[in-house]
Amino acid sequence: MDINSLIEHYGYAALVLGSMAEGETITLLGGVAAHQGLLKFPLVVLSVALGGMIGDQLLYLVGRRFGHSLLSRFKKHQKKITKAQRLINRHPYLFVPGTRFMYGFRIIGPILIGASRLPPKIFLPLNVAGALIWATLFTSLGYVGGEVIGPWLHNLDQHVKRWIWLVVVVALVWLARYWFKRRESKRQD
Image (tube, rainbow, N blue to C red; front, side, top):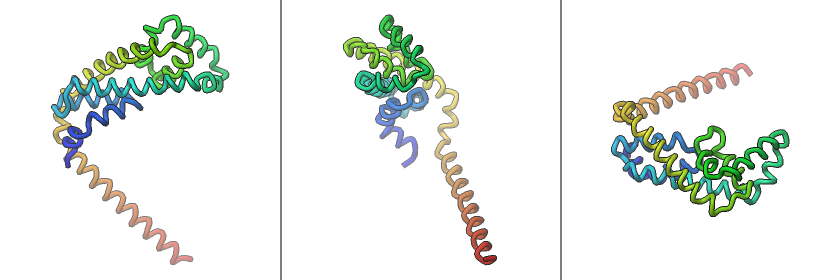
């Protein structure tokens, strides 16, 4: 099974799981796969949005349940945490979707939002809207980027095979060298 078949078979599931944990890189790759015709653009957007929304929802729930005890451990950052929580309560319609676009806030943002006691009835629709906007933007960027790296991707199988052979050869040389050194040290003992 080549890599294109793997992407066609498991691509959407990988996008959901990958966007729960990370995000931008997975989404960009999903856009590239859509450009190559391996996946459908609207389904990539929905898969990535679903994964991002689930991930943020889980972190929000962690923040609601354990947020205060988690955040209290960061004693020297308490002023910043308090300021962020005030911003969340004052401007939830900007802050909730905006955390997806703030570098470094992808994990801590939903936890802060949960700890700030923003009601779930406000968080959930904002989370869904933010996930859809974010997924559409980054999938589109990946789709456009697919134009640039598309020709290289058609030869990806050949590149992967060459790298695998290179790694195997280097590993064999290293193992042979290790074996000879060990054998020589045993002779000297």
